[in-house]
Amino acid sequence: QVQLVESGGGLVQPGGSLRLSCAASGRIFMINRMGWYRQTPGKQRELVALLISGGSTSYPDSVRGRFTISRDNAKNTVYLQMNSLKPEDTAVYYCNIRGLGDYWGQGTQVTVSS
Image (tube, rainbow, N blue to C red):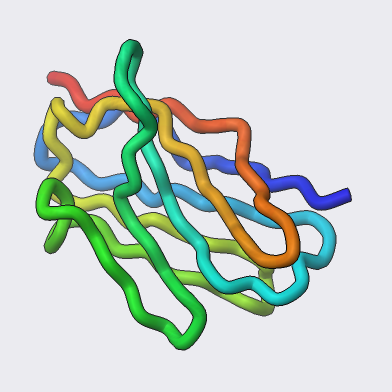
């Protein structure tokens, strides 16, 4: 059974950086996309970074230039590097991997506050 385990969240001051990790246990076949989403209370889950097969990435305007998604195939891990963090980036962040199945992590809290 595949599980995604996220880590790296926490409290950071505005302008700071965090790197989130999402480690997959078990084999996921025919991966076609990896993504990071975030959610705040009362709002829909929002896609903040997408990595599709072939290596293309995309980001919404709200994070473009500040967030970077990457993967390490040898470690079965996907990362989200977040720089120049703002208070409005505060949310629970989830990783998602889609292949033959659709897998989600448990979420990790990111709080940006002085």
